[in-house]
Length: 362
Image (tube, rainbow, N blue to C red; front, side, top):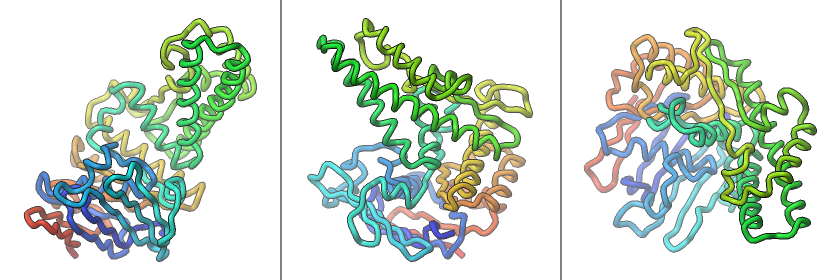
């Protein structure tokens, strides 16, 4: 596993003044300890190494340890002896990425470490808003297609510009140019979601993923070029819609769903435990897909991994972890709940000293 983390070092990150974890080459890292000890903070730090804002999406000034200088650093040595790091300094507006000591772009981190996570917030993904599901699904697509986040961001910016131009009464030539750009990028975003969903379904046994949306459905039933023409015509004939960007239809309103084939029900109509199991199946299939298609070993972060799972579901999860082609970092209160995980390194996260020590337990 060339992308496995061998050593992780946190400096002034949340409540960790200076902490290091050595994984001993294990693919499964189990972090246990009492509430407030900083278990989730460790996962949050790793999520930033994937080029993302972090799984909590918090302001960087809030992430820096209270009472410290106002900055933080996260550093990891990988199995292939390369180094990746993210730093933030007080007074700076942005994080900075580093690969092997040299400055790098955040997108470069995303290409090096493909990170995906499940927190208690994602446990409700099938019953929460379409916006939450869409954001979650796009993070999965990004692990498969590293250029996808850039396209999604660009699409949102262009649609906002279009709404502003309509309110300001911009001339038709300017709007024509915007609509052409929007239609092109919108189809690229929708096509990436469809392609990922189709590839993912190959690795799913008991559930199936579907993608729904104005453009996605046109691509599935016809072609991408037909969808682009349809959307361009739609934009040009709906310039009377001058509200915010959510007034018009498009990939910024799309959704994804999961159907539980074993129960014959959409995931949102199943129990909390069944939804959690479907979510975990989705993430583990994602890991297999990424490994098969790219050769990379993604990093899976599971916060409160055993929550909402009965003994059979936990056994299924832990058995699957052993063949997931990923490095899994999981948190929980009770080490005994993770006793079935194969090839695991156990880490006790202790709070009570200003220099929080993260001790791997053999």
